[in-house]
Length: 279
Image 1: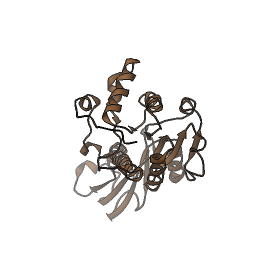
Image 2 (image 1 turned 30 degrees about the horizontal axis):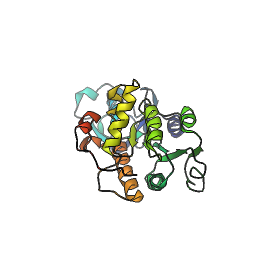
Image 3 (image 1 turned 90 degrees about the vertical axis):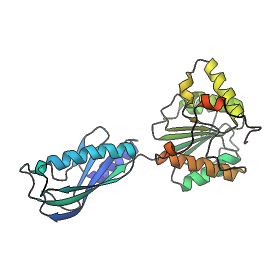
Image 4 (image 1 turned 45 degrees about the horizontal axis):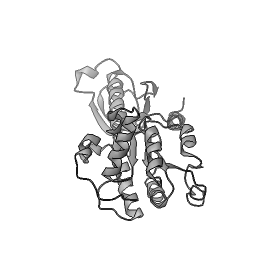
């Protein structure tokens, strides 16, 4: 099986993996420079970098790289470490570069107004595959979003029923009104999406969260919702708001969210209320 073809297939299927490549060799090793091994998210392997204890350690590192989404370089001294003396190695030193294979980052933008139009442009430049959903054909059009993967002009409930959201998906809710925001959020918090963000003030956010809880949705579902959406950079214009949202999407994509201030909705409930919406 060709490793490169399998990488393409994994990404198309929305799955993860990690590729280990021998990048530096000194002395004798049981393989060759540039040898590759692909580890899939189910633990299965395509290719080999020589077998033995080295391959077992690289397999474990590949699993960790999938989770962290950050590459690593491993160095093995086969001359001096007795645990590699299994009869499979000849002695030598090698370096192995392990890099993640990730599915495309899918961004679903609900709403096609001014903020959505700016967000589409900036997030597209940042490498997101974008789907735009709005119930207004005049707004959700190819003329306004020419490079989007999909542009869906239909009722929100109907559109959501046809979407396949995965753990690599991002959802941003910027519709034209509170009612539609709440409809989309009701659905979004019950998906496996990696990121859910909704535009609006803390007052609006808390009101919508409480209303959805009255319908029976559990409070912990809302702890992962980024609302108000975007990093706090003092954004005012649609373009500035779009930049702040994209920055937060990138932070989530690169796993640096732990370094960013993020409160649960219980904490936001106790915070000062913003005087107006950012719409």
